[in-house]
Length: 268
Image: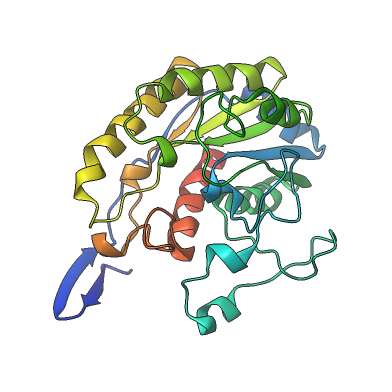
């Protein structure tokens, strides 16, 4: 059992506890999704959110799974080359070759579904970098964008906005509206909290907590599971958190930790 990690930054040494049991998922209703799973049919799982969902390079389209989605080059551009070399690459047969990756947290859920239930999963990446939950062009409630997502008729949506709108009081209302739109086409919805903030951004903590509170309330009001990212034990020092781009992107290990937390819905 791993009890702790030792984080070294220059002359600073920190002991980071890793052996803690925390409740990271707040329950919600996924009845329709589990019914589809038990039928043995192919299920559609969608990621709808910002760059942390998209893991993109270039400019993704509104339609899911564009050649710009799930790409390692831009997202991992600050990582050492020997680390990037170890990331498994995939050819999604969209003309760009073996340049895709499956490091996004939704791939952990896809993998968990296929292993536990045996269903084939069609993953629909509808993330777009730099976006929020509102109605401005390209944002989560922008009519053209959300229509493209709704038209795919997903069975389950992992909704993940917030990082680009920390502290805005409109996030809860927008999230509530997005949830209702997806439920209206028969999809169940899981709401992801915003990933933990880098320890050097202490001035952002209160805004981060406020946004997560709004997301949690919107999830609970619509009886959707909520992944409390604050409770995910990342096992790394605060100043190393969310530093894939030295600002607001979780790294490879963090995405896996959040993905494992997300996959806990399969234990309901």
